[in-house]
Length: 156
Image (cartoon, rainbow, N blue to C red):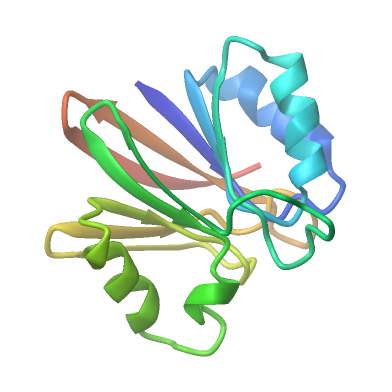
């Protein structure tokens, strides 16, 4: 199954639409800072399996700051990252500890607007960067197959 990972759209729905039309995923994760943007995506693509967390700029949101779920045999820990200190810890130790505590295979986070992909033993950390704006518009793609997965970072 192909999964797209977005974060930090900050008002830019168009870029997510472009990626969805190109990648044709079966599911998407949105990692905050543009929750209303992702609501538009959910309306436009009702067959798309959608997972989302709120970010520090999603004011008045009732959404969760962290999400733990299983998709195609993969246990995922998803967060925007502001509650996991991702801007303050170069080694992402709090994020890693929280993901391991959740028994996750994959930890997804945003907030920094910088792509990041690292395999740490049985845990993979992925930050798709920002789909919204900047000199480098980016996203992540995960391919799953019955409990196995690969992850890639891409640019628009």
